[in-house]
View 1 (cartoon, rainbow, N blue to C red):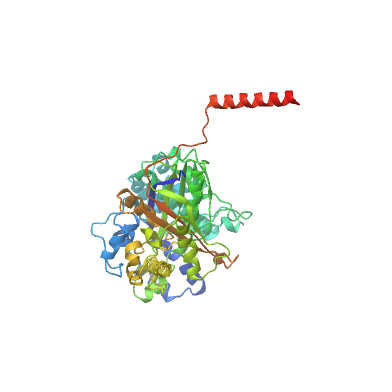
View 2 (tube, helix red, strand yellow):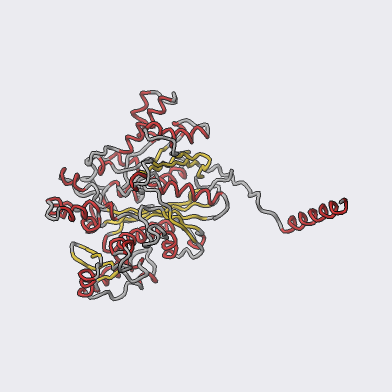
Length: 513
């Protein structure tokens, strides 16, 4: 079977400290119900600087400066540790500061909904002119800016959503319709942030993997937001809007939604589309969710910690035809949580882990690395959710013992051997399996691993449509170097010969009647 391959990955984080208070649902909900909240008053004193965010070990792991396993060299908690000499640009992507991102939101806006104050616009224009990936034609969209009084008027009288930087209003996002709740200013703010961060991830993927953007012919966008109008809340299309921004002129696309599991669903679908010959190069991308900023902020403040959920995350990967080099996506070894699977931990792990392994005649220990819910424990442990990756590895190991594929004594070391510490920000879809694709590509190239499994899980009950859990998984494997010739190609001469033979047979049958 001629499998599809993973050709490259791009990862971005955007430090958005002001958006925590004004866009994160924990904070905006608190402001509505308890505007004099002590939490909101203390919040500004617990925000990190851009330099602190850049030097934070999990963030450097996310953009590819240090390997996931290297996090074990830092004693927990990590928030008071730093990577010496850390820079904003890494092997897989970058960490962008808030002011530049506000400019990128303006650039991503094609309906003149974003207003930026003139002096601030000039400042960010200079910064983005120096950015290696922001195109000249995009910089041109940052014009002279707007007068502050016009911005304030839009906020005070026309329900625009304020944009803050350093706790000062520097612009706003206008509503896109006067009465449509799905096009109000708050939703448009969220959606422009998704688009802008998705574009940034895609641009990093393209640049760092020397991809010809015109070769991309399909885009699947798999974030957690939905764009649409009053008649189609989630009609889309983030995918095509990202394709337009990055210059993928030969691409079409669509959005895929499945809560946290969406990226792994998208990866499998991209691989299937390429393998079937429908498309040759499929980009899977997702921007970040400002709604989840500061989601566990109250618990962090109780423990006198900084607000660690101060970044939105994005990623992009490219799936292409088998080139004999890059790791293959084993579409014949896909795990799936079906309607009848059940919700017990053992049932979930069996469906997602051991069922696909059994299809391939593999043991649990035959997979070198499992990428599960790679949540950063620095964030989740203070909130009472524990170390999510470690819990997953314990369950996988326990099943290995039950299947007699491991000794009980090996359970304690399974996570360090076949897993990794968590490093992804709590952006829902971002931690669910896909953060490891970038490091995995490097490990395959360096012959450090032969097989990895990407596992995505989701909570469908959040939509109040079903109590069902969700999850899919897929195995990545080192390329054997053998590329099968397509059996579908037929020459023009062969076609003429086939037609001639058919006509002869037809004539003979006609004469015999």
